[in-house]
Amino acid sequence: MTAAETRPKPSNLHWLMLLGFLVGLGGGLAVNLGVGPETPWVVFVTDNITGPIGQIFLRLLFMLVLPLLVAALITGIAEMGDVKALGKVGLKTLLFTILISSIAVVIGLVTVNVLRPGDGVDPVLAQELLEQGRQGAQGIVDSAPASVGGPQFFLDLIPANVVTAAADNQILPVMVFALFVGIGLVMTRSPAADHFQRTMEGLLEVMMKLIGLVISFAPIAIACLMFNLAALFGWDLLVRLGAYAGVVVLALSIHFFIVYSLAVWGLGGRNPVSFFKAVQPAVVVAFSTASSNATLPTALQVAEFRLKLPRKISRFVLTVGATANQNGTALFEGVTVLFLAQFFGVDLSLQQQVMVMFICILGGIGTAGVPAGSLPVIAMILAMVGIPPEGIGLILGVDRFLDMCRTTLNVTGDLVAATVVSRGESDPPGLELPPSIAEPPGP
Image (cartoon, rainbow, N blue to C red):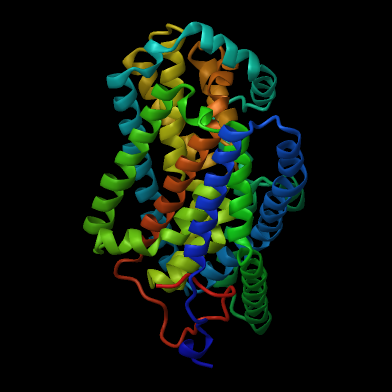
């Protein structure tokens, strides 16, 4: 079977996703402004119809994404052919991740220092927001890690029991396990090892097909998710702490449109306009779900069928990047810490801000690719620099919207990394495209 025969026909699924997003957002805002979020029928609809539909969609994705991640990483490494090629791709990915995340954090710190959004926050409103989010903030503070980096960080990367790590949704340790399995597969030459590789390829195809079925319902699910968000919060989601949210969005936009464009053009050798057009489906799913892990299947589609990247590169870079290349999260963490420092009147020295920058880079690597996954890391950083960690309750009202924005940056950054690392690389001759997930996004 040839690649042309196995490649599914294009569809307009990404336009349907965008339509679902706009319908859900418009309907939710109309309900919020017209009848109010506390109207009985609105409460019934959001609690019993749109809410469950959106959560079922997310849970189905999360159910399938872990075996997809393991199979894709093992298969991607095995297709490298030798450990030397793996080391080359891995080193390029690591260096690019560190570089792009460092630039992201610097942009965030400079922006928040210049515009100083925390200086003008109304203390009365801040106290009201703090009281509203105190319970949720306490839970986040209690789950904050003791540290990011140091020996314990690297110890935690190695699972004592991979099954337990998977059950606890500890993505990085599971990825380390899959990495070792892939390396072992590259180093082993035997009929049994070849059979195991084909089994992993089969698992990947099955997961991709199942996720494709789930993604076919994405327009409906995205409409439900956005309806709930807009109906319950309305414009309040955008106007509360407007200065802080504006600075975060400005910094994210600078990184998205300027840094990514330069990276794609200068390091990837591609036209930035055509790149951003190609990654539209992944952007829509990332913004709607606020989860890098949930967007991974769509990102794999985009890389293979729209960007035409080598499978062996895109699978490795995107599966690793879904957890380890979260420069949007790193940028957000830096802006949030300095904003809360300004609000509480804590003057951070240059040395402390540099420390915050490095912790944010590490936090971006180790943060779970799920909604609100960065908040515990922020709480930990706040405590380290003498800011009340409970202050994170101030930003809970706008975090969902900002989470959607930074996830969009994270996912796009993964595709930028795959584009840069793929330059000069190609799949081995004769490597056929597998039957892929339902229909890839159209041109």
